Length: 228
Image 1 (tube, one colour):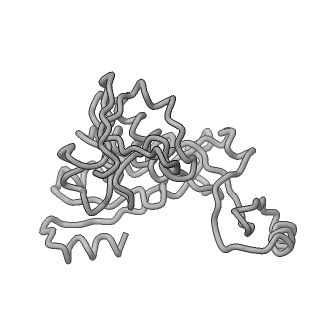
Image 2: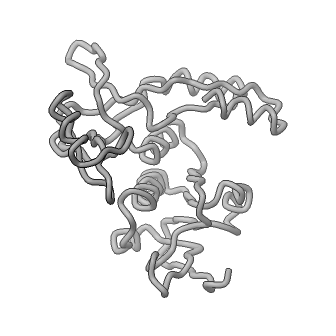
Image 3: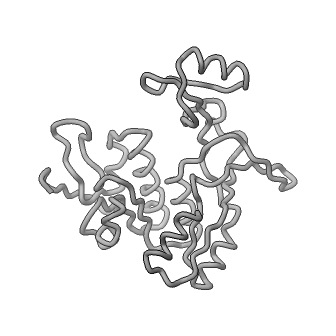
């Protein structure tokens, strides 16, 4: 949050920039807690991973040729700091929030909060915040120019527009573009407003719909030539 706030000011943003530590409420009964999948921490050999897992009670899994710890990735239910974030926006502040998906917490029947060892997907948290605050648009900015059909094959084709009805048939990597498309789908389906995915350097063009991939409630998609 500090890095983003500092660089936004250095880039010329004159509005107050405020970073908010965000707690993301998750369900203690979420099935994700029974099937950890999110890689965190350093890499190990198989023997090292099995040793530290036995020592700390961790779950580990292979990540390519190495091994790492995996933790649950539960669904975000709500953002605890929603009202303070809204108040900051109403005061004309630029708010940095939801970092890393937020700090996952569970809430008991009395309202008491407890942190849990998990990682909430940052894109799903972004969609949750955007919906809670009534955002006009959700932009997910990354290091690729947009969504590709047939990604990783010689037939990969950039997609300028995607309709909600087309999303279930998209075969996207679960650890990268998949959650981004799912988050955009949730936002657009619930709000009726467009969402978009694209490169950080193209943010203005992604917002205007002239770059990246825009997801709408419509029924057709547009592809660009591979030489775009």
